[in-house]
Image: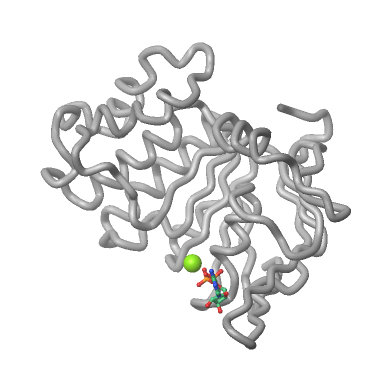
Length: 231
Ligand SMILES: Nc1ncnc2c1ncn2[C@@H]1O[C@H](COP(=O)(O)OP(=O)(O)O)[C@@H](O)[C@H]1O
Ligand SMILES: [Mg+2]
């Protein structure tokens, strides 16, 4: 799924309103932005400013209240229309890799099995050997047969990264990928992400509270009260 103009994601006027009882929360208040293929974009901003809501919308995991989203020139949301769930599921599996702050590893599966899990649902042609290759690249080859409970937080995040990459996504979305890690481990994860962006051409969209990590990308966007400001 590629286009000639190099645009990966285009958001126009995205809003998202949550209702809690009679209260309306404007989590996103009109966000427009363009992310080009191969970019590494970081989002920073205070808690509650809408970062997770935005990254979930960009990743086609949630629907906006209003606004439009295009992925590689294809309309995902817009004009009151939303793609069918089957198509969305396919796009999520084939285009995106997701990394969450809490890793979400399956505790009863080994490191190797966790990384291989997405392949049970969809396997991109040519990814044979990718589980081992990624775990090797991330310095985890000696932990393949361990369970998540037997490895450190930094190692768990490496496993989550390998799992996000196993189907060779075009776009990696990472919501506070080092939120649970100390600064040394955060730096290591940062290096891995930067390397993937520079040398594998992976488009990265990352939310972080870590200024050092945010600077790794070429582009920083600040979220405030549901709006996005280019820095
Ligand atoms: N499912 C939800 N139901 C109600 N309110 C929500 C929900 N998810 C997020 N919010 C609210 O939307 C705002 C933005 O949240 P979020 O996108 O998680 O911000 P951030 O990731 O920047 O901390 C917050 O006020 C939050 O409480
Ligand atoms: Mg968040």
